[in-house]
Every structure is written in C-alpha cells, then in structure tokens.
Length: 398
Image (tube, rainbow, N blue to C red):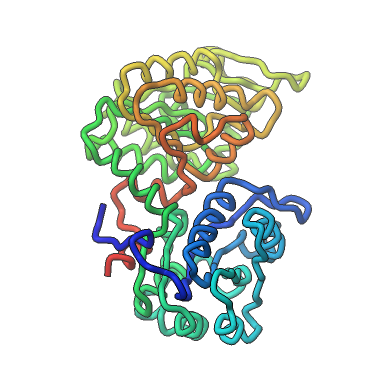
C-alpha cells in the first residue's frame, strides 16, 4: 500500500498532532448539511484525544466566490456536539501559535477555513509550501502531521503537501480505509464492472480509456450526462439536451467518446432508455430510438437499469462513481436509487465513489454499511483509479 507510516501505530499521548481533515459540506442559506465527512473525521479527532493527544485540525470549506465559501463556525459546533467536547475555532489572524501552545492534553482546536489562506488552484512543491509563513508557524507549534483525507490529495496546496517537509507524517484512519479499498482496483478481482455517471464528464472520458488500456475494467456502464455523451457519439440526436451540450461546450468530447466506442464497443454498456420531464412536469421514460425529444433528459430509464444489473451478476468488483441522473429532482432519483440497490445486493466488492455519489447515497436513504466501501473522495478518487500520482500521497512517503 505504499511506504506509509500510520498514526494508529504511533504513541500520541501528550503530543500536539496536526490533522488535515475534510469537513467540506453542502451549504444552503447559511446552514450546513452534516454528511459522512464530518462524521468520519470527527471519529479520527475523537480517537486522537482519547489517546491523550493535543489536536489541531485543519480543513477547508467551499470555493471562493461561491455560496459555500463560509467560516467553519458551524462545523466546530457540529463537531462539539458529536464529540461531546468543545472544539474551539481559531482564526488565522489571531495569535494561533500561543493558542496551540496553551492547548491542554485531550483538547481540540479547529483552525478557520484554510481556504481563507490558500487559493484552491495554487500549486506548490513540498519544499516551497513548507516555507510559507503560516505553514511554518503552525508546523513549529506541532510535533506530528496526520493526513486523513484522500479527497484533497490530488492537489498541491500548502495544507496538503507543506507539512510533510517539516513534521513526521502519518496516514490517518479514514485515509487508510480509502487506500485499503482502492487496493481492490489494482487486484485480479475479475470481472470488474465500473458504473460511471455524473456531470463532470471530462475526467470520466479519460478514465474510461485508462481503465481499458490498463485492463482494470471488463465492462463500463455509462449513465447520467456521460451516458448521454456516448449516445451522441453513437449517432443519436437527443433534442433539448443537445442545447445543453452546446452551452457547456461539451460537444468537443463527442469525438473522444466515438473513438472509445469504436475500439471497446462490446465493453461499454449504453443507456437503452432515458427519463424526460414531460409537459406536465412528470417523469416520462422513452426509448433511445424515440429520441430526439423537446424535453430535457434527467435520468436513465428502467430498461437501462435492467441492462446494467445484468452486468453486475458475475462481477467480483463493482465501482460506481457519479449518479445516473439529476437525483435532486423529484422522481429523477429513480435510476440512481435502483442501480445502488442492485449493487448493494451483489456478492462482489462494491466501491462507491465520493462527491455527488456520496450525496446521492444519503438522499436515496442508503447507508454506507450496505456497500464494501463508500469513498469520501471525488476527483482524487478518479485520479487515483487512473493511475496518476497524487501529490498528497507522494508527500507522505518522503
């Protein structure tokens, strides 16, 4: 699993431990929706303080300029309730070095949203990141660094790669469980079936090529916007959804999808039907042969679900990343829900990808326990599966 050190093997009693966690949550009207990330990383913080550590947690929330770019005040309150212990929020413009120095054994500080300090798209080498003032100041106040989140490891941000040059660095329990699960993708568990959907289709197109070239996938089922892209590549005119592809400048991907279909046609399972919103704002399922339609496509249909399920029967590994439709809309969560239900009943190892898929899991009333592993990572998971090095993991191995 790589040359890592694990915090579970370290005596942390009396030591000040800096932990990079992921508390990033959906935000609406100033309220946060507590998800699996806060719950899982809260367990990491609790385990450390129960072992007598002084804990300093660093996390981000949202993206600058968007509604979810907010303070971690509410996150600290949620963690305080979850841990039945005060989690004190500390601002970056305060004397945080003194705050950390005064931290009693078994207590927790949560630093304010780290993206108030760093831009999402900034990239640093480990050495350059370690020289940034706030990084070196906080590292000088701590004795160990724990990386506990796969979801940020694809970024070369200061809070991801900077501390490993300054402190003994360890893998935390949440990240460890992610790495254990991802080992299955590199194993010989065959047949391996991937179910790919969601709206971020650029990465998925590249991923499909990599999975086939590296013989990691035997079958790939495509749904959501990705499935619609492959329908276009297969010569189908969608109707209203074609305008969406034009507006989002996604038609450039049709050529790539077409090449993949010509090379791996028998291994890619396309939608047989889709669900549109009819003129009465109701769900209506139409066969692909009945396209184009003047109504927007929002989901896969039940015949497509049945076709996907047929691919699952003998699978020893099933990986799902991305919902099958716009699950947030009433009646258009059906495709995602039925595919998840089918995966939950298979005998193979089931890995459910993070991001929107994890959100869909909650909204369709599934629990993580119904699957072998539910990842908290989105893009980082795709990057890992594609065989790309993740800077955050590379930094831990130095």
